[in-house]
Amino acid sequence: VFFFDEAHLLFNDAPAALVDKIEQVVRLIRSKGVGVYFITQNPADVPDKILSQLGNRVQHALRAFSVRDQKAVRAAAETMRDNPELDEQAAITELGVGEALVSLLNEKGTPTIVERALIVPPQAHIGPISEAERAALIQSSLLAGHYEKTVDRESAYEIIKGRATEKQAEAEKAAPAAQSSEGGLGGMLGGLLGGGSSRRQSAGEAMVKSVVRTVGAELGRQLVRGVLGSLMGGSTRRR
Figure 1 (cartoon, rainbow, N blue to C red):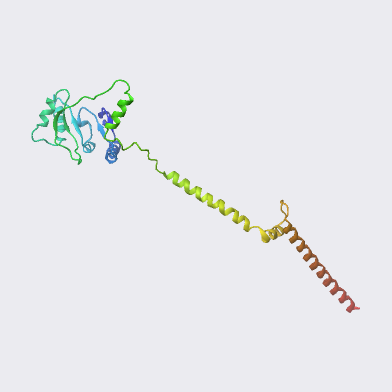
Figure 2: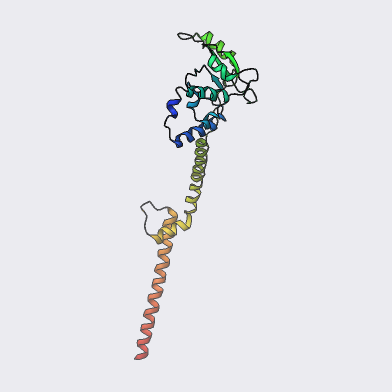
């Protein structure tokens, strides 16, 4: 519950944009179960568009000593749900200490008719209460049993973090398979054709290199023989 005391200080010379924003907050915050109370001596201090959003009214005495005061009394009486058995405008000026005209919302959200009532003063306790008194107050509360159990729901951050962790684990599982596919004969041939590597050669790589050298040497000898044979044969025919 929010209480705004001396509400006239909030609305005096307030720009229209601020008043519109306060009205919007009052409209939206009620749907969340939050109460908002504006406390002021004169209901005219609160703009009509905001006053129309307030369901609970507690009006203490107003003294009509001037024309402006009389207008304020009339305006205050008209903002409450009329009671056929009560003259609200006259009652406001007759209220004594501790008295007020009260109109509250019922369980269906409908304003009740205004009633003249005595206000019970707040009951307070000086100093900290004992653990037994605290436990008794908690047990007697209308909300007892509703909030004792802690509920820690999974947040959006935790859900997104879990998805990222799963993707990272899948990537780590896929990495060894990709590395193994790069090995074998293809990897060894790639190493031979692509240049040397700083790592030590395995027995298979050494064998492949030996075969390649042997084949290359044999092809080289045959090529040299063919070239020399063609040259020698050509020179013999010219003689």
